Image (cartoon, rainbow, N blue to C red; front, side):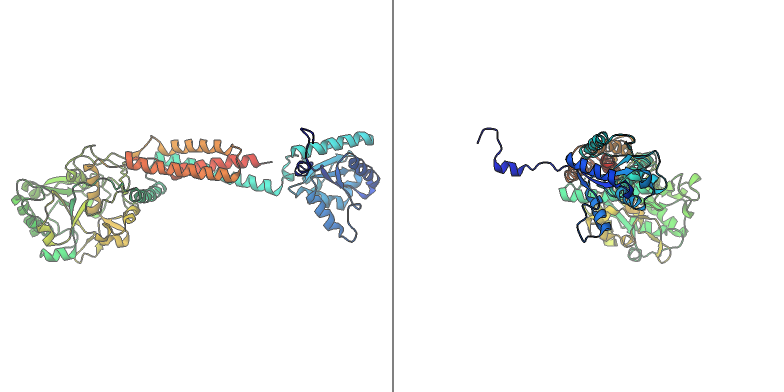
Length: 553
């Protein structure tokens, strides 16, 4: 065999390209011209299907025509006055317009224009002018145009002639464009108003999965000295020999708690109650004042007042001019605001709407503030299990009180008030992240059965956050908008790559995983929030929009 020649195997493994194919549609009154065009194109290497020559004996005409239109690449229409009036030609036009494979090529043999449904399917098509041309010239034009259409795969972009697949792609593209627009608007809205419920919901989910990441990577967060927390439950009231009262805490129980503490412990005790007056039991109030006066000199007592901008609930109606009860102030108690810095009526205590600084209950109980107080828009890192016993020592009975050896102690309601302690009070929706740790800490709080945390537990978490300088802040100003824009641009770039869909999806999935892991670790290592949901949605949406835009006809 000569060098450079093809072997027999090479020949059979490299088949010759298939010739262009066309379905010839015409009126029976134009059969002579149709026959000449049919023979002429066959002689020029064009595979032409024409009735009746290509209909096998015994086969249904309609079925044969339907199959041929679906199989052939070009629908070649001889448009004449007779074709315009032919019902069969109109049926073939409608069928060809609905086929994804068919490229429409109408040859104008008359000045008459299509009308009705014919105009709907043919009105936007680029016609081939054939009026007055001799047969050889007409064949030259038809052959050249058929080959161009088949080689380029292009035809008129008239809306009426779009294939079903193209219409589906355009519809999906519009939906994707709408979703990208929604994600962009949401990103801007969340940056302008972080406390919108949808953003807080996303943040709540994020912190839950952040807690899972901490457990998976054994990065469980700071472990400070435990903060003591006494929740005044019905059993503890009984052990201390005090009856609960309606309306406000019976201050006699606070006096009993202070008396039960060892003198050499609890150098800082916070009473998480509104103590602006004698309350429901004046005798108990006088008892509390006397006990505060008798406390060791090393012990500081802080007592709660409503914050100046408190929501107008019955116990805080006097917030603007509220003062600590005179007898308690005289006894040595220091007044502090019991603000949480957040509105928690219908949202978990996640993100501050006002700062927590000196003069607040949580600041006082922190005793140390290496980074200062909690700033506005700070996010409490609930991915850390602040309720675990190594961070929060829950005191549930008198014996535990008498044996307490810690430095700081919060005394608070267990989330219920009233004479029977059966009315919900000072309860706040629990962040989802607290359940990420199972029974580690959550089993200690009865209110969690109804999905709530008592206010004292929230104050303890705020105090520990300040003491450890541990809270979350955005990685960048306008973090949602910036990260959504960056990932959107990357998605648009990726959508323009000439990759198979499978590889593009795999690459996008890998990029999403890398970005998610980076965001999770940035929060753990730097306490910086890099948004997840909206940027990923923007990136995936822009990639899909770009990809579908390339699929349009």
